[in-house]
Length: 117
Image: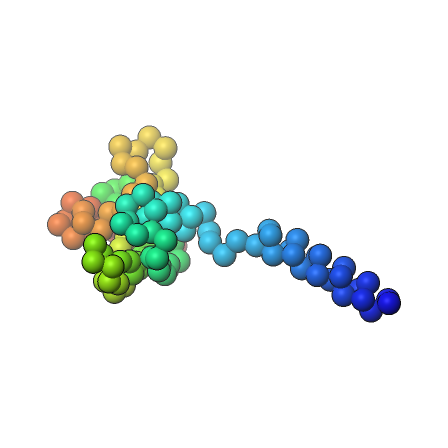
């Protein structure tokens, strides 16, 4: 009887422990929210995230995250993982907003410089 009681207590604490767990950082949550609004079939999308990197973009401080998205196209087929860049600007008075900057980097609109620590 005592073992059964301990078993149920361990189950209850395990459930409460899992409820508080979240495998995504705040940055990743914001990117996932962005993807939810911009993908045709968000529910089937798969993604991977790299760690944030502190950089200067066009002279302004920012954190960027390299991430990969594999989503379905209009025909329902996966397109394969595509590399993307998302920027989080740290200055509150920025004219830019936190956003995906992949195309801007590709055409040279954003100049990214690393910050040595």
